[in-house]
View 1 (cartoon, helix red, strand yellow):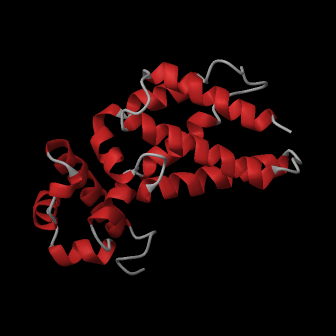
View 2 (cartoon, helix red, strand yellow):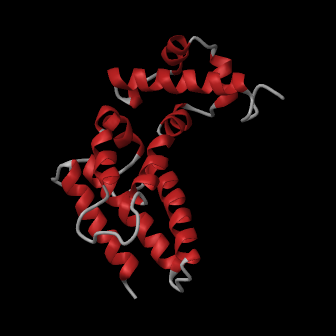
Length: 187
């Protein structure tokens, strides 16, 4: 197994060190002010090692924030039985509340309206999950609703992080939940 393979434990440890170093750096300064030299020094790896694993700082930042995408997808689907159309699952409100420690980094990667490198990953993963669920349910409008769900959630999340929507975590969770339930029940 070579050092760069996804299953290589050494490569996984190195990427984890780089992700942790980036999050630490971004806790002290905006992503735009983080340099590769400071990052690799903090991670305890060489500059060449950084480039073995990542094309640039943005690629590392998206990787470091990839957990937020998985958490968002899980939070949106954290309900059993028939969903309450007005109240979001507790996991969704918890998800919004959990964003505070790295909000500046998320804002750097997720532009208003849901664009940016993190927005693209969020849209892709959420659309794929929604599409699978809609197809499993036999919905004829699966691709359309999956796209609408992904775009709606990514856009609301980004606008909220950028301060364009004035609501606390629980309130924004309920609001976006109501939009998503309406999309899923539309015919």
